[in-house]
Amino acid sequence: MMNKQEAQKLLEKYLNGTITPQEKVLFEQLSNRVTKKRLDRSPDTELHDIGEQIYAKLPQPAQRPRTNSYRFIAVAAMVILCVSVSLLVFTKNKNKPEQVAHLAPGSNTATLTLANGKKILLSNATAASLSEQAGISISKTRKGELVYTVGQSTNLPVEYNITETPRGGQYRIVLPDGTKVWLNASSSLRYPTRFTGATRGVELKGEAYFQVAHNAAMPFKVKTDKQVVTVLGTHFNINAYPDEPVLKTTLLEGKVKIDAIGKASSGILKPGQQAALTGAGLTITEGDTEQAVAWKNGYFRFRGERIENVMRKLSRWYNIDVKYDTTSGEEGYYGTISRFKNLSQVLAVLAETGSVHFKIEGRRVTVMK
Image (cartoon, rainbow, N blue to C red):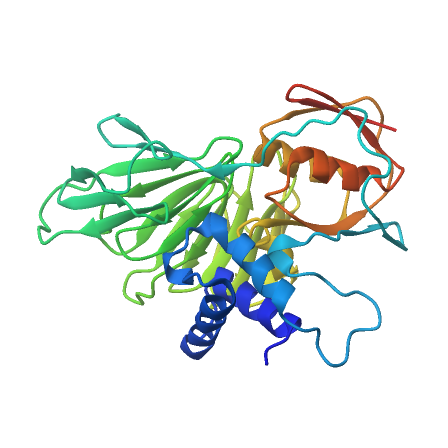
């Protein structure tokens, strides 16, 4: 019988889109047997609950690890945090924020802006056809995806649409070529209604995870304000928020080429590598792929991050404004927690370190020593 760790690995692969056909059949059979729910008919927002049900009913592996034992990754209820080099395991209901604010997490919501300027709020739209545009059918599926389907006409003009998520939103898009895009909070993607010419080009602001449909004759290009990423068919994540000091591109599968705009700096990524673009140029190192795509899989994963980095992520997802009443220390925060917890639960965990506490007033959070 499958154990917890084996199921966790399959869930990660399922969410990342790297699961093999055989593994997918095995995992879907497990979900149907344990939860009585079919994964292929479940919205993305329910996958984390399904994962928790599977985890609860499976046995531990025969030989348990001596140290860190992570809960099912998408629904972690126990959060492990490190401050400097000390590992601390925290329990609930200790050093809570000064005020409890049960601000709900973000959800699947976005706005689609058509070429003619018409705006469609996707969270309010029913699962049906939304528009016919230049021979392209645009629809919303029952699972909450925005899907573009190419018609037979090929001589119609190419038009550009924009899908934009607010703070507290995320959305998934299937582009006309079959490429799948997961758009994180406070992000936007501009793309054509059909791909023509020598390349397939899109423009990104914010963060997105791409599963690019393979087409060797027409490379896929993602342009941000500081770089262009060129691929043939691959899985990768780009974090290009304007308030982040480093633009990060992380490759999970395939190969991508990165060209910095306005700089004589470029590089090619291999799977497992991460490119970091700063004012000093482009550097390529081995990356933490789990951390890079944690948001897409429904959780926060902190690995030695300063409190400012942590709070920027929380501000986008929970739609909050952050104020600092103190200068930050050198503490590094480590941990994994579900993005579908209320804000108060996440802040309570951070407060366990004893190095910070929080004051919550409406949607403003003040960070204090």
